[in-house]
Length: 438
Image 1 (cartoon, rainbow, N blue to C red):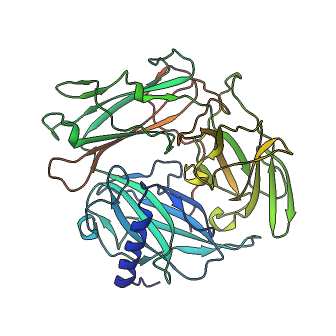
Image 2 (image 1 turned 180 degrees about the vertical axis):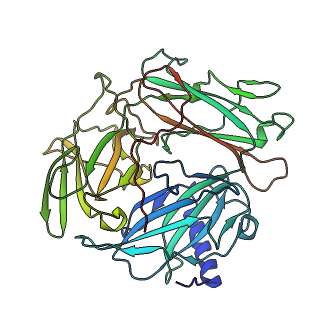
């Protein structure tokens, strides 16, 4: 299929997406027709969406559009470390054009819900990145460039600094109890002669959550060859618990965590087993995927087009909490806590409930309690905190020298806590993987 370049549409699309960027960049769906949005390194469905500048790997953006009518197109925005659009123009950060169409798409096959699966790989033959940093792709219908359907975020790194990191249950507040402390060192090498706080920004994420990200960090000590970030209270995280998991791959049998499946035209309804609070219980190890999901179906060749959509019913048996709100935290919602992920309380059932249209596959999730007046979720009430819990921490290091126009991502590292050790610096070990190819 031929690519079509719309310079006028591109300008409209860029202006439209800038309004959306009033808030920090985060992967978000804006249309009810878009589902199963995933952003990862191509071929690595459980990966953190970060690639090397001028490297061989690509970012994959994969999503479904229900009842789609027409082609999809996309534009790219470069962002600063905090997620706002940077001062760079497209010609500064990319080779290529805005408003290109997404030509890798296919319609669903023999499913009760009709949809079109789209896949975009970046960089590609039409688009190349010139600089490192945060990026956001906005997707819109080709004939409606001013109406953004989704925003997919990723990062491009130029690895100019080294990072060594670890996680310990021995924190400044307790020892092997309810929290985990991240400690790391940054080795700037020849990038900077001395540490200048105005030139460096560091962000630390737990399981890709956006509500408890830590930034504005100053090193506890500046040595000749490295900057050390240890024994810092800001880097103490609730340990939480292993993520809950469900799996539904067929309409003919119940999967993991499923109570029963029924068909009520036009959807199959998957009712999950009731969840309860896991606080103040004994820790149980489980190799989870830290909130991610993977599309899959039984006896199918291409889950991207053959997996069906079901309405999945979540139930958390609990008293009602007047002093806060309960959310589902998962890649289902791009790890965003908002109206889409908020649960409603049913006083008759004595439970928090949520019905979600999900594609068949394997999912991780947890329940977070957000106190009134706060935007940060807590695990203590509904999941419990156990220092043994395996959590994934990602450290992003940005550099903007004096007079620079954008934040360069010069280092990124991830470290995973170890359920059987108080200190670990291991890499992510994908235990659940599925790739889509056609």
